[in-house]
Image 1 (cartoon, rainbow, N blue to C red):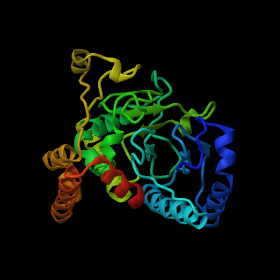
Image 2 (image 1 turned 60 degrees about the horizontal axis):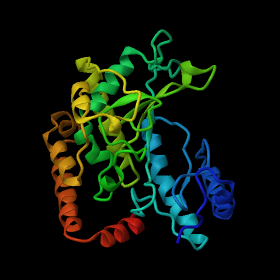
Image 3 (image 1 turned 90 degrees about the horizontal axis):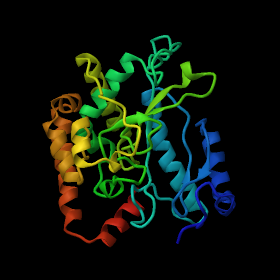
Image 4 (image 1 turned 180 degrees about the vertical axis):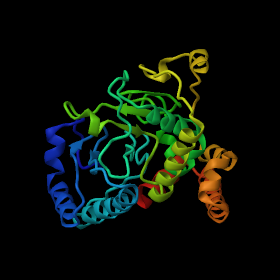
Length: 302
């Protein structure tokens, strides 16, 4: 039973969850983990807390601390917190979007920023983004790796379902996020929407970096920006723009990962052998069961 049935951004939903949310925020403060915002989201009982940016390794650490803290504090208050990708089939899914920017070694200059570009994005940013898009089919096996993940990645659900990119396009795989007014040079960033909390953040961020760097090395370009929901385009229009549907199952993403030489090399032979074996075994187990079995196991596991 959801803790609230309020609308997105509803103060009624915020009030219903206030006691446990206040306790979660206090726990984060005690761990020196900065939370950028808090608000009730679209789904019933769904609440969002974006974490402040950090260097990649610390960001991965923070994701682990976030999961453990939220679930533990919620349990102490007699409720269950689930970060599963799709804990309720008829409600909005849970993402764990990755926002990233690229900086010089001194940490003084955001290398994604270009003031003369239409979207304020540098050539380095376009190359990096193109690498992520090029490797996205296999990358999904790391960023959205569970059986339940692919129930979330559907068109028209703000989770992204196609290899498109665009400025503030909530249905694009990669969104060019507008910078804060007056400080665009330091705040422009890119967002990967196809990521959720069933992933191992060290592998997810490592795969994202490997894919992006391949785009930089090969000077890949991402094609034209998509300014509308790519799900509203026809199949032929998407084909002309080089936009492709994601793998629709965990098994398809794992096959794409195995075919991706860049990601396989980044993971190394021992890790890829173990990872593919475990995840394929997981797919075989869940594919033989019904939806209720899938939801029950993912809701409490993640």
